[in-house]
Length: 102
Length: 193
Image 1 (cartoon, each protein chain N blue to C red):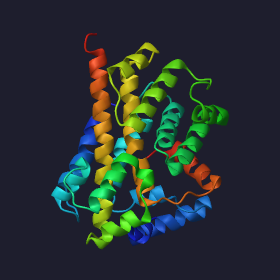
Image 2 (tube, rainbow over the protein chains, first blue to last red):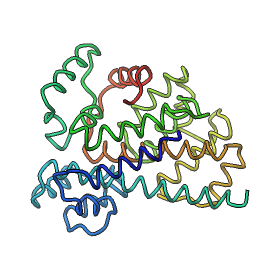
Image 3 (tube, rainbow over the protein chains, first blue to last red):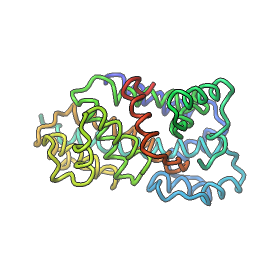
Image 4 (tube, chains in turn green, yellow):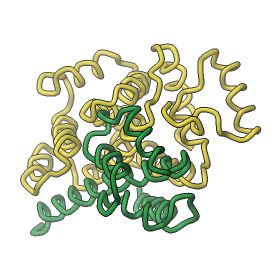
């Protein structure tokens, strides 16, 4: 799996820095689960913390706040990848700590 | 599907592909396929590369082990779609349905190797609590998993912590077992690209 870190970096770079319908700063805020206004912030926090609790109303509220469907799509994707990245980085740091004296 | 664009916003060529899939498999197109085929330059393309490496790249975990990890992560995320989808793939890869259901119903008593059990336990905690510590990792190493195996398992966990969140946030339709069986056959034959 030597290429996987590179593949993951390419994914993060694409969603955060490449072209999008949501602004780059909105996508980065969604990735970080920090700095968005409600109701998008509520949706993003649910995606990051417990996505199974997302409801039709959460998506509808984000749409009614002025985001179009493509922007909601991008923001949710960034929120999911950001949350998974934080988990992965935390776990890898724990693995480093567990093996640092070997 | 909560966003109309993900259900029907695809280009003509992709819609033709979906029609072909429906005809060949005699099953509806799974919502996960509709997601990865929507504006694939944004998400589906780069994500498929990550997932293919994690699930089918070189690793001392078998394909069945990795699909079981995917199902287990999904279950810990309470994601019904991914749990059912990857249980079906793991069952196909192992050619053993009982092993998968035993792990998903009770990890402590399932008849599996200790390194796999300890790895799944750690992945479950990471998924539910969003964090693990050095002691958690030492326990996995003590059970016999190698450092590389842990890294490989974390790569699986990453992919399914993304996909499960999207499945639930976008409201994937959960079809009957036949559709998941067809999806499992495809993933075992062709992988994630």
